[in-house]
Length: 288
View 1 (cartoon, rainbow, N blue to C red):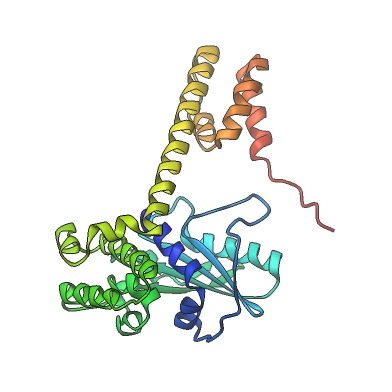
View 2 (tube, one colour; view 1 turned 180 degrees about the vertical axis):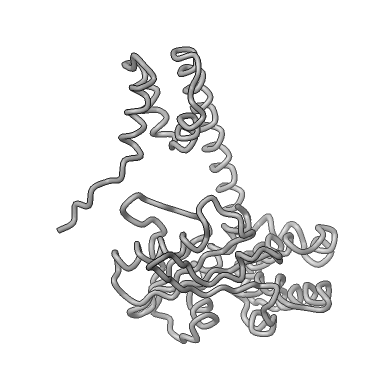
């Protein structure tokens, strides 16, 4: 998650720079939108929405093409949710950080029988580093760009970071560079070119550290709640069908806590099935 959080920080800290890079839009009138959308709320640390005039730039950063929900469908899903809420032009850019031979990175559209949705894909390892090197906000991405000499590229990035005059910005950009460079370079080379204490003093380093701790705590709490629920259900009903167990594993911490209370009233496994059925039942459209 450190890589996703870093990219999200950069896009939201320097929205105008990302707009100029991806849209050739030279404007400072940009609003960073919330990353939670209505209907069944979805939120992802790798997603950033930027509203520029009557247009939204949706950035999705991916370290790998692996995804629980196929990426092409996710892009369609985000598009329809954004369109429903803001009703304006939407430009979607899916940015892959690490080289891969997966065919997924070459896919730029979702196709179904009667549905076709297109979006842009950028593979950083194929990108010219020149425009990235010219902009301090994009220097961290430059570490992953196309080059015949990766070590020379990282050295150039380090030199450009040192040229940033404002101390806080230099520390934060340096931290972002070191995080993303970790996807490509050995730690020994990174530490040769960048001072570790600068990274530790940066806002983004502290933010990544805190987010990592919170996410770890949340995962730990959910795992504890999940184990307790499964233990109670197994004790009450002897065995749980694999499909039912899989449904339970997808529940949030809040839903697990509610299930723990509800199961006290279950007299058979069918009660459990009905309870879960109500959770996963599609919600009615309450709009006019």
